[in-house]
Image (cartoon, rainbow, N blue to C red; front, top):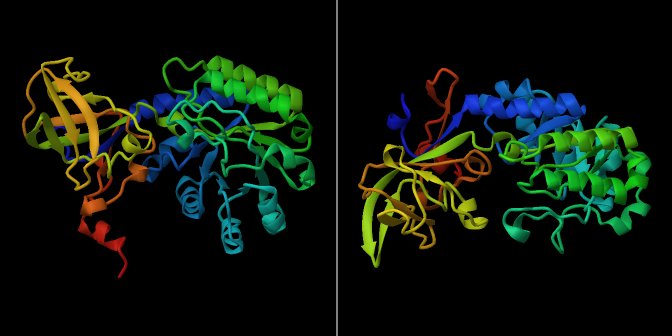
Length: 382
């Protein structure tokens, strides 16, 4: 199978590019002496976990199902954080995860003893009051006003830190090194008394370590300095930063339409296959037919509004220009679609899920799924 014969819509991961990204993580782990976990909320492809396992320390989950996947499919350390738990969830999680993070002093008081009795390491998430989220404004800023994430600084003196192993903060989103280093320095300055009472600090995700221009040396230096000052372990849990620019979404033009503007209707949808296009929002880059580079509206001779075939009027990906007119059957490739993409897809309108595939080192393409009506129907109960 070649990219030209790939059924669409399909997310295609390039394993060689992923391995290059993982080498960056391996270097940070080695030179800074820290742990790096895969945040499966951003990227969860069990078929590729054997490749990732050799470069990372484990996975971090946002709930029970992700924790189970990490335990069963990745097979190394499992960390889990949720804004709230039930007692039954904590009981089940202690059989899956070695590290459980609580969102507040209240949750820690209710469930900390239960988790600790099962031999689990305990973390407390703190809202550090430091924001460097570069994408989406408040929607992706964990420290936005009124955020439900993390205990506020004013309540930390009342915490029994003797029962806490890991000081956890997360305030970044697609941040470059200035954000990563800034967070590390801020935590060291603002929370030193509490750091001296724990054995590790988790600086969360959002470190965009493989984005072009990210200063990896600066991150390594900041971690080394932090560890030298406090003598505790450091954990990072990137998701997008591990898989940036490692794969695409392949789509096909189904039909053309005119309504004051030229429109192209695709088998890939913003609403069902790329929800962040609408939620952030953002405009993904596209490679057009014959590997043509697309442009802004009006930049090239032919401009189209691209949309999906759902019944939602706002299911619009954006406006793009092409050197030649589009026609039904043309292939479009949406770049950088591995993070927060297929993990968020849905079947609105009965839309088929986009399939998953991987291009191996030698170039051969392996299909990892064949989603059918049964996958749609199974989500709707008996």
